[in-house]
Length: 266
Image (cartoon, rainbow, N blue to C red; front, side, top):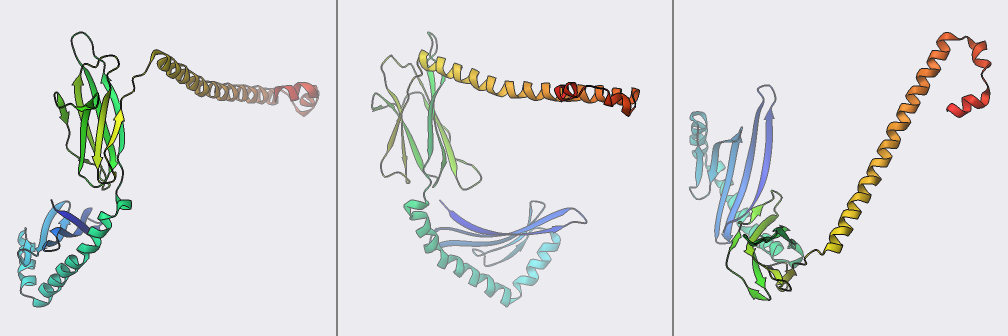
């Protein structure tokens, strides 16, 4: 598997609404197997690149082919790119050292849950999910009463989050019996030993607590909203009433109102 580190350079042409960017990639499996790429894109289309494997520039449009041919005739540019490849090679031990540190590993966040309950016709469906882990390699194993279960198991590949972290999901169809323990064992470089997560079924009392808690939260959200609506309507009505009084009366009429009544309305 290739590792890579890269640098991006962006440039934008505002007048024609074109978006261009350059990418420098260092791909490697070891310090002896290195590929250095310097690429230029425009609107997501690769226009040209320098590939250290080929040792030259390559263009993919009529114009960039002409540019690549001219660059390949310039020994200075080619020597510069060779030096960049060597920089790439010399940085590999540093990158591998960082990736090998235990503190640089991101531990997976694991969630085990029952997706579909079993009935007389269908088994139950359990899902074990691991989120936000790095590096990519991980292993999820289903256990039934502490023994590995391999039947009716399906898993996704490691899915990239887009932020260098990954997630994975594993499913098992199983008809669990009362007292039977269903577990998901996770093995990852961030863990010093495999970690086992047990499924804990929710009892009726637990369901009632969740329902009561949800109802309480709903009421806590509804009452302040009702109060705000009532306050705004009351304030609007008072302003309308006060405006009507001002239009129909002069200042002497307003002064004849009893002070306590005005304070009461406010």
